Length: 284
Image 1: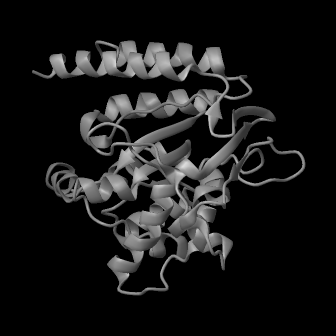
Image 2: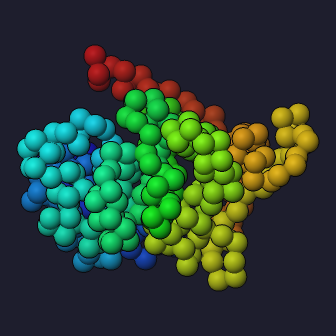
């Protein structure tokens, strides 16, 4: 947590957070050390132990850049993935973001530990981090969902429709194969495969009896949505997040007709502008 002065204080805050929300119907609390290169082995071990004690997910950036990978090899004589494996980090419910610079042995480690992956194509492209080997990861049986890594300097939005589109197109470009990562797979990554990556597929990720009633409706009456030949291609390549009409979370209607029912838009936008001014001042 970035609002604590020391790793020890952050762990205490995280422990309190886990205790407060561990039985919440909507919030799934997690332990989230930023990355191997910003944490010591001791802190990472403590984070892993904390997550295991609560059976909570642990989220971490991993193998995002070539520099991270090269620095780890130089300092530890191990890849970032091998370093985490060396002290049992993946024994918890782990979800790693990025996994761009992973070797075949790294992939084997992630597969062996049932590690989930969050692919963040917008971020990887914007920061020139590289193209994650998503097709290979999926072919090896890993669960690869989608993330935004936003909205700081690594991305500027939380647009999951955009991530579906870019994920599919980036793999085509990276592999030289226009059939790589078809639209149906991109939609699955945004839904059920993403749920599996979080080990929450029994609760979310698809519309089934016994799962949470989470769903959206999407408009198909705008010019860019006509005609429609294939629903998956339409969702990934033609439709936009602005086409979402209704949002239902755990059976409660949150957005209806494109309007949020739970947040006052005007005051929220005003507050966001206020925060923006504060942030701009703080970085000068």
